[in-house]
Image 1 (cartoon, chains in turn green, red):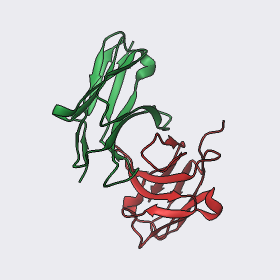
Image 2: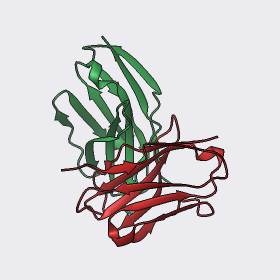
Image 3: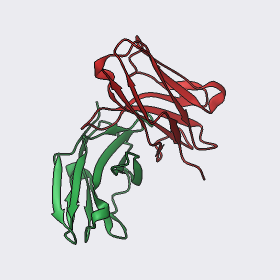
Amino acid sequence: AQKVTQAQTEISVVEKEDVTLDCVYETRDTTYYLFWYKQPPSGELVFLIRRNSFDEQNEISGRYSWNFQKSTSSFNFTITASQVVDSAVYFCALSGAETSGSRLTFGEGTQLTVNP
Amino acid sequence: EAGVAQSPRYKIIEKRQSVAFWCNPISGHATLYWYQQILGQGPKLLIQFQNNGVVDDSQLPKDRFSAERLKGVDSTLKIQPAKLEDSAVYLCASSPRSEPYEQYFGPGTRLTVT
């Protein structure tokens, strides 16, 4: 079975602070994909990143960065210099290519609130 | 490029009534997904279509839920009869490929069953 755990239910920071959202996953597949999605108050899930299990390079996109570590089964997401517009629920998701095809297993989400 | 369209955006029904949701995916996207998102939880896949064929419906409560995707484009999801625990947001997503690829989500339909 596949599982994604986002232990932080809610995080509150002040604007310009850096914040890291944790994601730990479980899968028996050797080939799998990890995703992060953002869900703003409007409700529409917005794709942020996809990473496959063979690519452990960290990635940076503007103020966003992702740290993938297979040794600890973690795929953490850091927002640098947070802004009020970053306030949203963030979901980590997993897709195991061998057992679940393209079905995404989502974590419970982390509610991030950035205060001015 | 237009995004995934869903309607209605909100629906309130009484338990034991039936309801239907509609989804129009991004043009050219062969794969379509329906998810159920209960308040405070992550989305859970209900059914996946590849063109007009079902790929995965293992988590669809088939005694009350049904879905179809005629002509491989639009899709409808139906609940009959509805239960209180069906109150949730129903999200439609589409993807250009069937393998693990980014999925593009619609705004969802918020269903309240009273």
